[in-house]
Length: 140
Image (cartoon, rainbow, N blue to C red; front, side, top):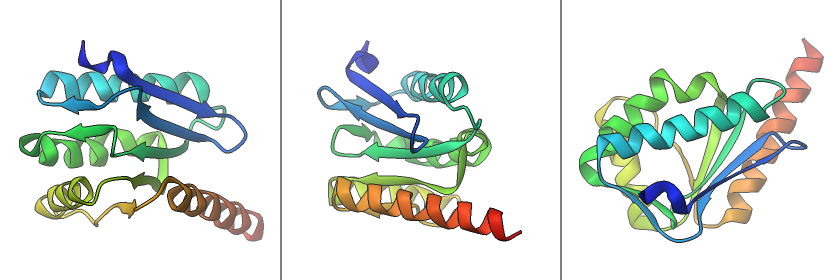
């Protein structure tokens, strides 16, 4: 199975689920895409004490076939966002992959997702977002 190289690591302190791979994971079928989301949702459902968290995706290890990019974007709208805070997904990695995914989001009318060239920049974005959300909830 292609997803056997997929690595999901959940950090309970930051509520960040890191999605990466031991090797490159290239999703080429709808079944593989569904299996990917099933794994992610199961991990968040069982690990996330707050029942919502953040996701950090290594696009240099996880790639999705161009024909599935629109399905990828649509799935985020319907399912994945119930587990992840709004704006709470950060992706990093290859520029061509980032452009391909952004194109898929534009095709379904969704705002372009958060992409960063490096892991450190993506993590910094998620930590800042988490801090802002916590500050806003205290002020309310």
